[in-house]
Length: 316
Image 1 (cartoon, rainbow, N blue to C red):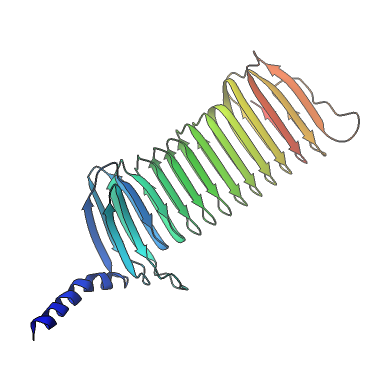
Image 2: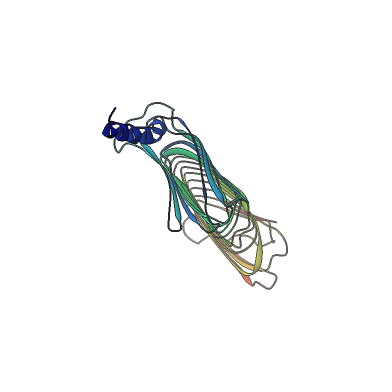
């Protein structure tokens, strides 16, 4: 065997691990990174679990997608890329997607994306953004700002902090114990259930029900179409509440001492049921509908509610 043949054999053996990895084999990678690293994760199919820990190590273990061409685990500047590289064109009818477990320092910022991949994320403090198409998201104890987006998957979240935005098209949102400054929910043909301590909340749903328990709020804005709204809240002084509904029922339960001016209007056959005071809704001289205006306490907060083809219920 000559020297040239030996060199070629050495090159082939060096490339062999990468080729094997691209055939769905087990991986076990690690790297030292700082706590303020930006981490980008890209996995098309399967499931990925990401969690923070106290070590300055990034580790990846598990199995790659059966159809993967390559696996990228590389640090460039302050950005770590973890990517399962798939063919640019392909049709995958099997369930042999990636199954990865990733450990990262708590303080990293996270940017995750997938297509038909489920993601579980926990204990990350530097901010988290997760986007997937037909996968479910399970995110817990994540702070520093959170954006979660799934098209046809469900979102389950607990103990999120910072500015929080949860969005899905045909999936449900189940969020609880958020201590965020600002919270946004959005769903189309999906239900939303939110229990939070956020002072500012914005929620929208189309063809889905909305159940909010938002504690003490300074600003609440809600829009629903073809869905019912259940809301339990306490108003801060000078709080602003704006809610509108089309073809849905609105139920507001106020807790604590209520100091607010309340205006409610039901159009096109809707009705108003007031259990906060003895004030009764008034009917217009012509056409269907009802309206009511009254003040509780010093009236420092403002509540404006409107519905079309739906009822409004006010209680404490």
